[in-house]
Structure formats: structure tokens, C-alpha cells
Length: 298
Length: 273
Image 1 (cartoon, rainbow over the protein chains, first blue to last red):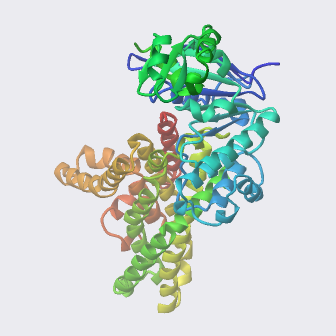
Image 2: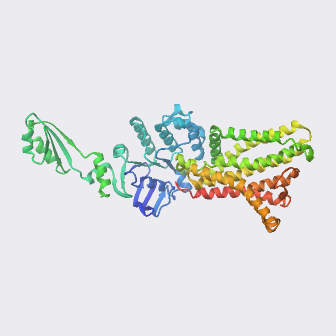
Image 3: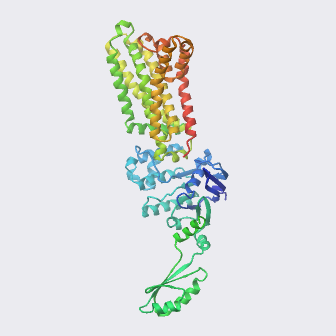
């Protein structure tokens, strides 16, 4: 299958500072790709280049088989900007109707689109009276116009409450199932973990990691922590049996690498009923994200 | 074409809700009525019909008011979208930047046309009420109407260009007011001062007519006064109107809107978001 978005060795500098440094990626139809990185990591710059809003210095970018910003590319790409903004004097229905007309569709479809994002009741009110979350939904509604081949979503879930966020990802699942390629950005791995097919981590303009969550977990090889609670009076016993554990009162913590996990667990369970409880804690999503986004910066 | 109409519809709604339609109509109507009342004195002495005199007065009014209204409506067009953050999304939609500009221009021209219709219509009605024979001034009024629209289009285009250059609404507003002062007020003062200092020399005979044609506001005034029967009723540049052939001022009136739109388009193309 040909890729909807192909970027290879893309480089872009602003006044001598490299915002993007030889970044390569592809997004196939039906694939949801999350672009992660700190503020200033280059996510928005990358998206604006894909949309044809910014020129780039070197490398190649193909959007739906055409140059970014060309008529063919713009016809197939939908964009949701970070903090989607609209004219406050227009109603939600008028604004979406306008966007429908710009894409050559009938403005009468506006209400159905607003219903799809849960805004049908506010459709006749001016956008000036909307909350941030409602404006974000208007932004999402316009991104759904005309079955786009590629959706570029810049921090789409910022400003959404947890329930809306779940609805949003359910919508993305539908779009991906229909064959749309999705590139979305976020600065929190916890927000995108289960709902995307591939994660890309940008740090200071360079791609520092790429793969599924399982790939990244393996590659990061961060230690697993075994958390133990001792029965009354046995904490000192356990500390003596496990010299590499750290003790805080009746609590003990043992860190080990992924490969040593089973061996360590065997040692811990060997302690028998001196233990009240154990918990095995894999590295958190935040730990994995920090591992990759800091590695390059330091 | 659909995209242009859709943009025009949205822009007209915005202009209507922001009270621009009401403000423009109110301003034109008010000034036209004041002029009709104040300009009733000289009729008999000039021997011109009532409406032709009114048209001559309206021409002087339009030279100031039409560019002002046009610049007030247009300075926010691009800088405002940039500041609100609506521009990046708009630019990812199909359609060229020229289409966006032409859509906005169409909406703003309709607002201007409504204002002109109200103002000129009231003035014409007053002339008809005051006495018979006003019908002979109708062609001049119609000519004033469409040239006023073209003058408006010129300054709308100039306003879009400034809006794109300034990037921020506050800066664009300042530039727009500067352009208005410069093109409509100071330009004529400077020319008059030069003519007086020159004392009928090369500047007055050769350069002065060209300088008038180069300014869209002056070309508009020249064309309307030269074509009108009521040249005698107008003061100031009225004398110069006789020295410039009609086709030259007509050409300037027709070319300026296109030039302004080309300028706006070039400035808008350079805007990066």
C-alpha cells in the first residue's frame, strides 16, 4: 500500500537554529501515528510543513502523492490547529457551513457534522459564547468534512475533558477504519498510549524514537520496580535477605532490569509469609517518554 | 466561484453582526442629508438643476468618506484573522489566496453599495422634493455611484495590502489612517502648495495633471467633475478638470481597483503563518 504521507530527511532551520533535523517518517492509510515532544521540539513546525504553510530547507515531503500545499494535497488533507479559533460573530452552523462550501460541499451538512461531535444544541449560537472545549469540537467537526485522506491534528485533546477525550478517540478509530491516515501531536504519552498504532518522539528537532509502545518499552529497557510490604516486624529480615532492596519502614523496593525480572520475583516469593503484599511496577509511560526525550538533549 | 461566494457570505454576516453595515449606512445617510440641506443656497445663481449641484457636493463628500469607510472595513481583514488564529486553518483549505481576497472584497463592496444607495438615494430624493428638473442630473448621480464603488474597491484593496503587511490589527489600523490622511488630505494640500509656489510654470502645466491622475481619489474627483454639467459648481480642482481629458481620468478610475487588488494579493502571498 502506498503511504498517504511520506517525509524523508526533512530539515528546516529558523535563523540558524535547526527546528527539524533530517526527520523521516511515513503514515499509511488507516494508521494512527502520534507525534510526541516537548514544547519547541518541532511538532508544530513539522505539521505546518506537511500542510504547506511553511517552506522547508531540504528533504522531500509527499502528501497524498503531491507536494505539500498543492491543490491536490489540500483537497485531501484536513487540519485541526492547536487551540482552534473561529470568528466569534458566526454561529457554529454558519462557520461549518462556510468550511463545507470551501470544500465544495453543501453548507446544509453543517448540522449533521456538529451532531457528530456532540454540538447540535449549540449549533445556532455564536462561537463567541462557546467554551474552549466546544471550540475544539467545532475544529474537529471541520476536520471531518469530505472524508479526508490525511488528518493532521495538533494537540487535539488539549482542553477536552476525559469523557470528550474518549469520544474523540472513538471518532478517530472510525476514521482510521475508513482508511484515513492520522498524524496527531501531543506532549503527554499518557494521552495517546492505547489509541495509536505508532509513536514518534521528537526532541530538539530530531526523531529520537519510533515504534509501537511495546517497541519503545523494550528499547528503553528501564528497570522494573518490585514494591514489597513486610508483615509486622519482618522488614529487617527481608532487608537482610535482599541486600539490594531499599527499605522505608515496613516498605521495601527492589529494582531490576527487564531480563532479571523473573529471577528477582523468585527471590521475593521465596520470602514466603514474611511478606504481606507485593506489587510489580513496570516503567510508567512518563518514564519512557522522559527517557527518550531527554536522552538526546543531554 | 463557489468558494468566493461562500467567503463573501461569511464576511457579510460578520460585517452585519459587527454593525459595520449599520455604521456605513448611517454615516453616508447623515452626511448626504447635511449636504443636501447646506447645499441648497447656490442653485439659482448657477442655473444648474438641483440634482447636479447635489452630485457635485456629493463628489466632494465621497472623496473623503468612501476611502475612509473602505479602509475601516478592510484593515482588519488579514491581520485580524492572523491575530485570532483563524488564518492558518483557512489557508489549508482548497482555494487560492486571491479567492479569499476577492470574497472579502465582494462582501465589503456590497456593504459599501448599501451605504452609497442610502446616502445618494436620500440626497436625490431631497433634490427631487425641492423642485422639478432634477431628473436631468440623474446620469451624473449614476456615474457618481459606480465610480464611488470603484474608488471604494481601490481603498479596500489598499486596506487588505496594509493588513497583510502589518500582520497585527493595531499596526494595520495605523497604516490605514496614515494612507487616508496621505492620499486624501495631505496629497492635495501638497499639490496646491506646489502649484502656488510654481506660479504657472512647468510643474503646473505638465506634472500637476499627471499627479492628479496618479492619485485614485483625485482621479475620481476629476472624472466626476469633468463628466458632469456642474463643473462650475465645484471649487478647487474643478479648474484642473478641464485640463485633463476625460478618458485619462476614466482610465485611472478603472485601473486603480485592479492595481490595488494585485498589490493586496502580492502582500498576502508573502504572509507566512
